[in-house]
Amino acid sequence: MATFLANTFKRLALSERGTSTGAALRLIAASNLHTGNALAKNWNGHNTGPQRWLQYNKVIYPPQQPEDQPRPAYVCHQKTNIKYSPKKMWYVASFVRGMSVDEAVKQLSFIDKQGASYVKEAILEAVDMAVKRHNVEYRTNLWVAESFCGKGRVFKGMRRHGRGRTGEVEYKHCHYFVRLEEGTPPDHYYQPGPKTGEQQLAEWEESMRKRKVTGSL
Image 1 (cartoon, rainbow, N blue to C red):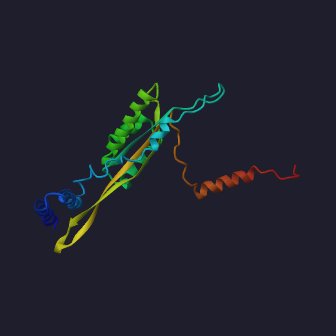
Image 2 (cartoon, rainbow, N blue to C red):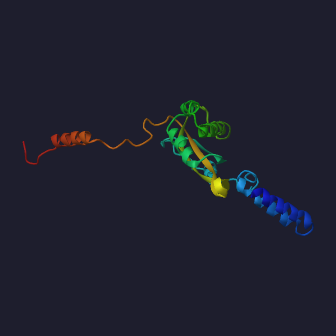
Image 3 (cartoon, rainbow, N blue to C red):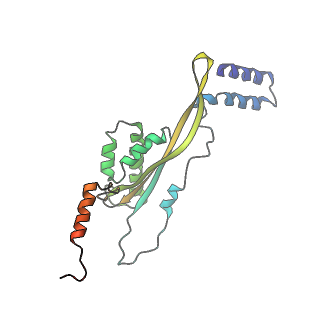
C-alpha cells in the first residue's frame, strides 16, 4: 500500500511540474510517515523538549548570614527525546534516587537495561557541569537528589498483519531529569514502610506503661 502511494505521488509530481511540484513532494513525504523513522529527526525540529528544568540552574539566592547553615550547591540536567519507553525508564530513574554519584554510576554499569546507559550518561554530564560551571570542588561529593522521567514524542505508524489487515504501532520517546546536590546522601531517602501489627502493639504497650495516672502516688 505504501509503495503504491509513493509511486502514485511520484507520477503526480512528474506530470504536474510547476506550481504543484512542492505540494506533490509534500504529499510524498506524508505518505512515508507510517514508517515512524523517516521524518522523526526532521519533523518539528524546533521543539527541542522541555526547558523549565534547566532554568533552576540560573536561580540567584540572597546572601546568607554567618549563623545560617550553608546552602548546598546543586545542578539540574536533562536528556530529551530518548528513544525509550517512559514506563521502562521509570524503574531505572527510581533506582538511583538517594545514591551517591559514584555508587549510582557503579550500579548502573551492571544493569542490563538500555535505559541505564542513558541515565548513566546524564549523571556523568551533570557531574562535569557541576565542576566546570557551578564551582563544585569535589566531584565525588555529590548525590542524586531527584531523578525522574517524563513522556516525550510519540510517533505513530502502521504494521502489516495477515489477510490484508493493518495495526497501529507507537514509537515512544521520553525525557529524563536529574538533580545532583552537594553533600552526603541521607541514610533513608524513601519513607519507611508501614509498621506491622506486632510493632504497633509493642508501641501501644510501651505508651501505656509510661502513662501517668493523675492523683496517684
